[in-house]
Amino acid sequence: MTLRKLSTSEIARPEPAELVGASRHPIVVVVENVRSAYNVGSILRTADALMVRHVYLTGFTPPGDHRGVHKSALGAQDTVPWSHARDSVAILDALRRDGYCVAAAEITDSPSTAQDLDPGHFPLALVLGNEIEGVSESALERCHLALELPQFGAKHSLNVAVAFGVIGYDLVRRWHHLN
Amino acid sequence: MTLRKLSTSEIARPEPAELVGASRHPIVVVVENVRSAYNVGSILRTADALMVRHVYLTGFTPPGDHRGVHKSALGAQDTVPWSHARDSVAILDALRRDGYCVAAAEITDSPSTAQDLDPGHFPLALVLGNEIEGVSESALERCHLALELPQFGAKHSLNVAVAFGVIGYDLVRRWHHLN
Image 1 (cartoon, each protein chain N blue to C red):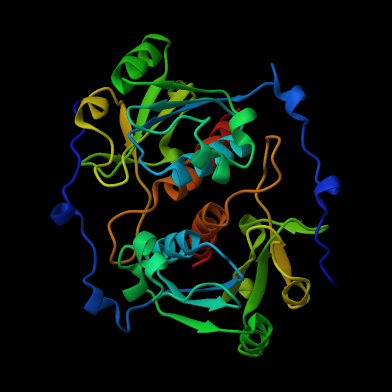
Image 2 (image 1 turned 90 degrees about the vertical axis):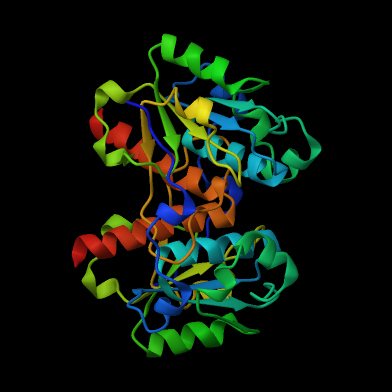
């Protein structure tokens, strides 16, 4: 059997206009001081694929209309709801008041995985931190839990856009499993 | 409860010297004409975390000792076995002769997921294609199956390093589930 690649027109996707008001997964992403526009664009592209509710770009993270972000977002900056704010902590406090479970993508003394989550953990806000420093201490104080991926090699961390891809897919699958 | 981030020295990882001859997951990655050194470095970093056997960088993919690759590989170019070859098809033919199941990360008329795999699908070679064109037709002819991720948004694809992260973790988890 020979596999045949589908052309872009054969791949069923909603039109951008259909996404307005469409049902989205009860997940938001809070990006804290991610320096690389390349990473931010890649995160927006994954956020489009995952149909998350919103991406909060905070601190010195470049905004979604930054030229460098466009290069890797490839249009996802127009299909994913995003906003920019200076203070990640104010965003996290507001999300907690709105009933969100706040989860850091971080290596801590109390690791959880997406498979541990139950319906009470949704809606969920996933916090992604700076490429070098990770999630800030003040943001971590607002987190209910920390999600961690097994790592078998010699290095200590994954690229932040890759980590979001893996954890983001885990969260969406877990939500579908529970619903 | 306050979460506490682990410092680098608290995170248990093998030393690079311990990885020589260490047991690795029966998975190799064939990277075909990936243009961006940033993507290649990120792929090597994920390949370290996943403890795959080997990464074949083929065609015009920059090699692991390329300066730009180092910037995002962050040392993983020294902890993951990799090699560079011009012809991806010769690599795939050799892997098939060695008993590998060859799987494209690609959207095709016959989609599979990692959850469909059984013990007979390992060892497995995952083929990652060019950022624009995807996996080449001649490589696709050598593939036994194509692995695809659900995408809920308006865009048609994920960044190649992100797609490798999600599918790579899926493959390692599936292998552990089966063994």
